[in-house]
Amino acid sequence: QVQLVESGGGLVQAGGSLRLSCAASGRTFSSYRLGWFRQAPGKEREFVAAITWNGGTTYYADSVKGRFTSSRDNAKNTLSLQMNGLKPEDTAVYYCAASKQLIDPRSSATYDYWGQGTQVTVSS
Image (tube, rainbow, N blue to C red; front, side, top):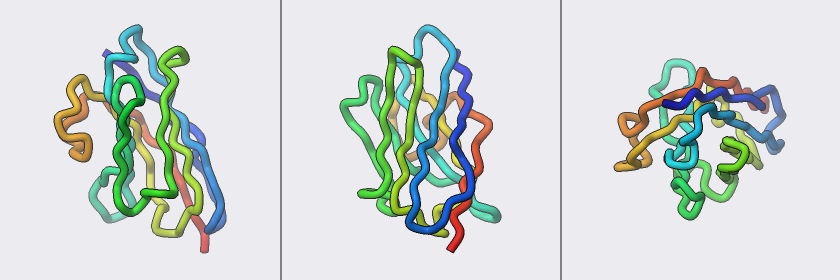
């Protein structure tokens, strides 16, 4: 089992940057595939990014490709999401999630554990 805690959210102007972190507990962190999702008010939760157990492969939603970068440090049990060129439409609560088997990295149903989320607000 793994517990996830996100941090790093906040208010930023359009074009700015934020770096989200997700701290995980548990000795088997490196065996989990990890993902980022977000949910804006009145909208469904959507996929943002995912990363394999060793960081060798990453996946991104088309809407963030080229602007967001996901990375992980298994020695520190942390997952990060560097967000550059932020847009007002990026405003949402961002969640990190962990999966034992990344069958479909873009599907929230794939993930077994979720953090509580961190708010990101981008002003125009």
